Image (cartoon, rainbow, N blue to C red):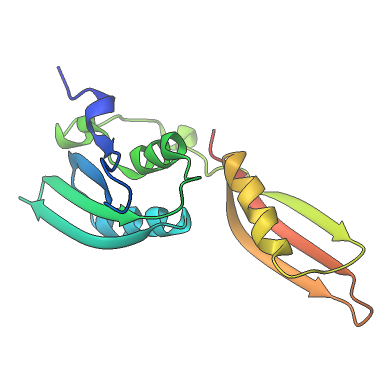
Length: 161
């Protein structure tokens, strides 16, 4: 009863070098889902060369043709795309009644302070790439650079696990 999670997001690697990789998303629809999917794909450094979407208001089928780096972590991309897809059970109309004092709490936000002696080009990019691999979601960043070239980054992160 339900759709296997593996079939909701499919990544078909290009057959020949230069051909695009095809990403297919087949899941319940929600407002802004296409935007969320595009944002994740672009955050992975991929370029969307073509896209197609179809929906009946409850279920959607979205296909992306993407071109990008050979170092793309496709399994992590698939996991992130699955995370933004609504679950199958959201279309059944089932409601879970929780007492008012047991409403789900928002995820904890942690402050990560990064202090470096010398600033360099691409430092923030490298830092965010490592945090992404650790499956942390960056909510907000504040970057401070002193006149003598030192840098302090304050990152507000949540753990997606």
